[in-house]
Length: 349
Image (tube, rainbow, N blue to C red; front, side, top):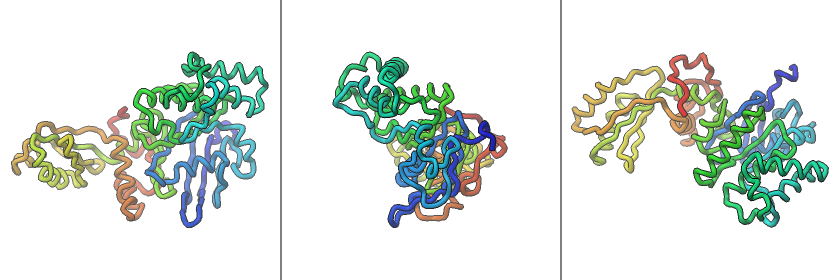
């Protein structure tokens, strides 16, 4: 394959076991160069293990993985020269300044002292930490520490960046700062593999999404195509919370799916089957027939939360992968392509 067309990240049939636990069970992954790929999945799905394999921190038991064209086992050193990695917890030294942290990372990567100083100054200025650069990291907020950890992975200007749940535990303002930094990197051509449990994060940042469950990919595709493939979200807000159960029965029967009740918001919602038509007047008539008073009725495109629940709900209950993938409009590990959802209402952010 010509170097210009080679994916930045490739995994084919990768398996990894820790004792009796199968962390990865034939995982396939393909990330084009210059894109942001969001790796989604519940806790224990295998996301972090996949990143550790790609970063050469653990070796796969079976299958192949290549990063920037290099095999992660046979060419581990070349892989490490090509990547930056920011894990789930900030790996910076809180006892020294932010600027000294970056200089230290530069020297560990065999940059000369002058180059390391220059690079540290550039990164602090670029990502809005110049004023805090000479403060001890222990005085930083959680968001500032995570931002410093992110830019520490950029000291050598790697073409690929692996981010393992980079905004876990951050407040909304700090999370937005990390998102802005990732967007800037992607705009500059950096390939980013992002694992996250925040579906809004994946929706905002990712060009492509891979949903992983029980160590295997169960769906891939652009966010708006994944959403379009599972139908439409129908929700009803009620005046009387005591009628939520009755409304749920009506919505489930009308839409052919399992309704979800939110007592705090007094809402009932259901995702319809792909291509099905649910007419609002018919819903209102059905609710009126059983005495349910609706304050608001709405149809809108589904969110990534809906996609995630549709894909993983049955698997989490121990049922087959095929059924949960069918609910999302395709086979297990099927790519939801542009051709599969011509009825898509467009990307919703």
